[in-house]
Length: 474
Image (cartoon, rainbow, N blue to C red; front, side, top):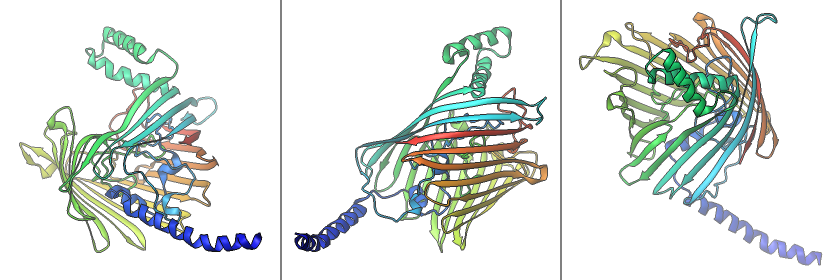
């Protein structure tokens, strides 16, 4: 009987192996073509921050000591601490090219924040928390047309809920006639009707809700999407559409309402035309970016009219590069010239230069370093998330195994002795589930913002936040 079994295995094993290889090759050949963003993600050897921090963006996004983790960028279904696509052996997946697919993540965050002065008698502290559910959906024929959506439902509580109510009041009072006792009373009544006078606050955010049609001459997308041209993790002056949220420990990015037309010239080159959908055409950002690949370098040349900062608009011209010369090298240059009487005004121009390096060792250690220099020709300030003259970002990530990861990040303004430093330790505790502990210390107005986003928050204050996150992907 044993001999018969052995002979049967010897006969069938090569046949089964051949069938398996054929199936894998066929699946890879029929797989939907990847967009440039997907291709760059698969080829990247950098640390997978979205997988580490989770992707649901559950935290209250406020640049203060009340920092909760979250990720407002593209949704990720990879569990924190699990192997990223670049860490595993590549076998073409049997991805469906049509139909409707749902994925998502549920998370719970708890944090305690302490603001200066840091002594037992005078310091003040606050609790923050959030529970969220993210649902991602993609449908349609991936080779012809698709619709993609990502919605996040949050319940925030503690001090974060109080901040949310303050934000609602801040926008309601001007809409009701400006600061006055009657307007304040009416705004308070409306706020209580919408989100309640106390307790948790529920919010609903759409990070993505767009449709795409793929034609031989061009790909057309319209709706809420993430448009990100930047080469840097944090500093990306050419990225006009999606800024970094420093109140999010994952430094995530948000979506934009836009119309996008991508005209391909080849597999790695094309013309990308984008216009945001604003309340008026004068306030939109519109233009194009020519991108390509040459001598081992990815490059992009862009020209846009940016009307988001002022009604006259700015002419924005940018250049971005990324290549690999033992170290990963990235660079961006941008010139912003405000329009005056219909012509660009060089006397008020702002120039921004970014240089970055990244490196990995045995896919366990990941290093990232970025420098941003803003040069003002006149009185105009840079437009974007970081307005200081000299800005520095650095990160160190360690992934000793498929279950554990450690990440340290710092945004620094050395000249002004300002900075924000975060530490996160993540561990996969079950299939699809992870637990992360984090600490964030923030000292002053790192971004150089002119005003505080919250009326009762001292933007130049120092604060320390300690917390934990439990996440489950599905």
